[in-house]
Image (cartoon, rainbow, N blue to C red; front, side, top):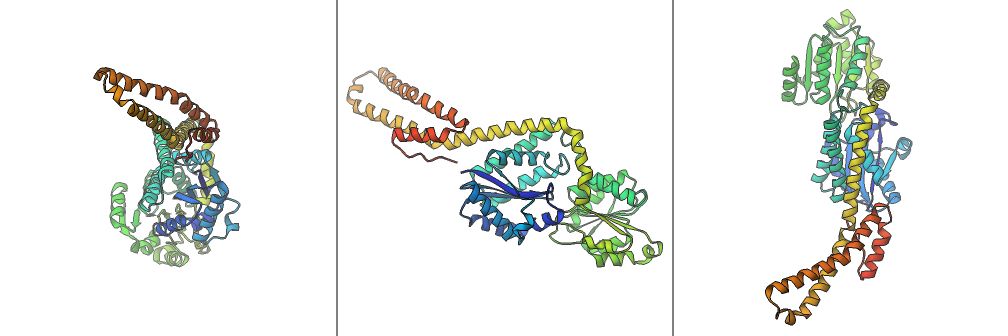
Length: 429
């Protein structure tokens, strides 16, 4: 059965649409149950990240699979089909593998070579396996993607500047606040992006640094590395009042920083008297910061949408590395295609070999009384001779059907071969 990938990404979708379509941890079990109930779908993996929401599935056909996966997205995410019809894209068969391998290698990301995407691809596959949603075909697709991502980072310099998004955001903040040296910063979250942010802030001479996170232990570890003060999310309101810059990047399902909290922070004691501005850099999808906080005087916000045009300029500077990655992608796609071809023909080839062995064993059984009169050595030579004859007779048909399948005409020849030998052609995975 063929593979179909369908979804939306930052290339044509707004951050608002991406956050409406995004899945959070507690939603996956129900989502995979929905996918399992779709008749055209037999295996599936959901890949939901800051930059994209995609579903990869083994389907009965392109048309049936496209309609089923599109319906799954708008029903499970409660988004009207017209809202994402324009940015929606699909990739079929080999094109689906090329696209996913591009994603895993980091060359389809907003930040070229971003470090998080490979682990996100791996986590998506692991989650699907845990939910019983995947199988041999989609698992092979994702294993190939993970291998491609690893090779891209090991064999090229594509991941040499993974902090481009954070760097662009902190540069915006630096201009908006007339420099960051000596300023007070608050980092909300303690993951990869938060860790990158603390490094950029320290490089720019940030003064007081606070890190708050749902897990206080993770906040403490990051604060220890960055030389900051840790805290839990219950400290968020108080920390806002002291911050000049807020960098937020969590996996929360809803808004963490709303207009009321920001208004209270801006009206608190020293800040109100000094009229200090507040810059919020929201690196999360779904967004952590309510865009309406800009209604509060003295508050500025930048989110993923605001950073797109800044970081995409860098792609032209890395053309040579992208070309190297694309060569790896093509090599790994050929490897996957070869595996799929072998897996598809495996039942036919095994049936041919079984038929040859059956005929051989039948003839040996018929001649058993005569063979019993031969010395042991000669009897073994006769048996080996019959094996070689069967193998040589089947060799050319098997090689020919394998060669033809690589050009796209394998099914027709395979069906003819099966019919000639008198058994049904049932392609494997």
